[in-house]
Length: 295
Image (cartoon, rainbow, N blue to C red; front, side, top):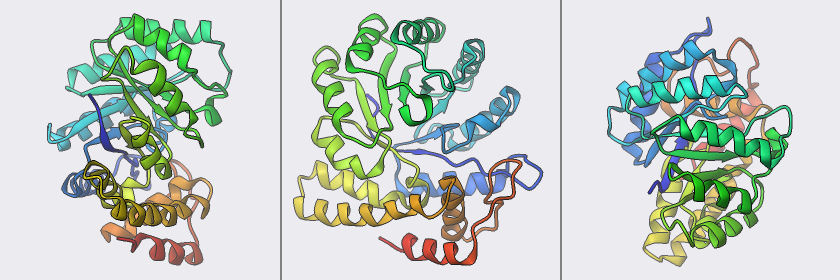
């Protein structure tokens, strides 16, 4: 079962749009030393939408080599092109990834009949465990508990879901319906502030972008929950609430996270999106500095 604190890792590009391997290695080593349970390459935070299939393969191969089996390694393989998903899943098998994260098709909202077709084709064409990625704000479709129940019943390699929705209700519904037949089904929240409610609802933890910046706060929260340390949980939740302010500093928030990583690791990196030159100003950088000092 996949559980704990997972980082959907930022993809750090150089000024030419290629991968900054030195900075990527530094971030991976920091996350591993902090104690995250796994890294997800090519999630939304990892700008999967900006890379070609060839670039994705080159990147995840490198990330896998750096991780080298020390923690779980997941790869975001979602695409509107099913053939591309299948090909990247096969490549993930070749480089010994532990699972794939597959986002719901986006741009056009598909009904559950078509979504079932999408996921069933993918499930039949990979040996790897699949974690569904539910992100209705970006895809226009919210995966229902009944729909996931049907998939989980039909495909044993669908083993979890990342639920990125500003509510705990999905996690509750997924847990009540699906874990009755699959106690090992992993239900992750994509909003970090729901870590404790997620765990209280028999969820598995979070796959959250803020762990790029300060993984220890979330790791400590997870440990406090396992230890049933209520006083520490209250302190941790207060810290998480403060860290959540980082998402409102700049749009797109990925730039904020890259700025924070640059400051946190004391490395000079390109903090913009691939092929763009969007930067944080000094006022934003100062606000980021204040937030990343939370321990």
